[in-house]
Length: 433
Ligand code: ADP
Image (tube, rainbow, N blue to C red):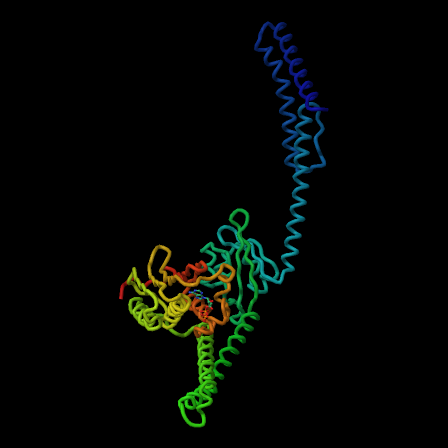
């Protein structure tokens, strides 16, 4: 029966009952009876169908669809249809969820679903193994289980662009890289990976570079000593060797600088760093920087040093000095005579900042992302000629990151560059020196 036919049948039945009521009313001489006679059977009919509907819904069995004609038949069939479609959708979703669970269960990485309150909703087998999460932990806050202040800060911070690395609470020798991916209604998927192997490899590489540099230092000092001695003899049988000796001296000095920078980098990379942090007096640091800059520049550049806030910065002075002086040294090296080098220190809501701007040769956009790589130089010959090692900016980047900061570079070829170090507000010591 179509919808239209059902409505027509229902309408005819209602009209029939009304006519019947009118007849009774006319015979009984009372319109109240007429109303009762018309409405009561209709009401009873609907209540009976309603009762069948409620009973069917309560039973929950799709197969036992109550049979009815007219409009009620349509209602039953409509609900039946809805229920059937719902059941199909549910089955499809269940299949998707089981497939997702089966594939994530097979993942070698730990996967944990968290709700908006950071409570564990679901986890895979690897999470059980790597993070020691069990079924008893469903509904528990994940931070409580991992027991890592660093992870808690990461989770609360809401900046999930990169992963956070933490030692495993199950095994201190294991390093975990944890990444959170937000999705849906404030839900999050947490992915954990064991990166101990990678860290061990990096450590081996770092140790090798540090040991090799250290081992090279002593023979180089001996060679340099003899070279200095020989070069000092301007006359006599060695006089003809003056030019090659000078060249050898220059090269050995270069090697010494490279070794010294490599050792600096190795020290910066060694974790944990045992050197304690202390309030660093920026005024005093700037005074030393300015002296050094003047000595290198020898009036070839206009130097502008400005400090806009005199509070101290919490950190390691030697690292900070090394970073800042590298930037100033570069600015002087890559700015032609007559140019300007401006060094500025300021504090705002975002944190504390140092910028070194120059009006030098600048860097092309394609080279910018690679500048902080070890030994990356835009112009190798020029860098060598100015005594560069290609390690300066790598040292700057590490030193700044050691202080929870980051290095930013802006540059336009032929116009100049600005290298800025940004540190968080938490690095600022409230009192001025
Ligand atoms: P280097 O010892 O060669 O200066 P760095 O790591 O300090 O090594 O710098 C890497 C490269 O970045 C340099 O070789 C140079 O090409 C470029 N560079 C660094 N600072 C500047 C600057 N202020 N202006 C232009 N180029 C720069």
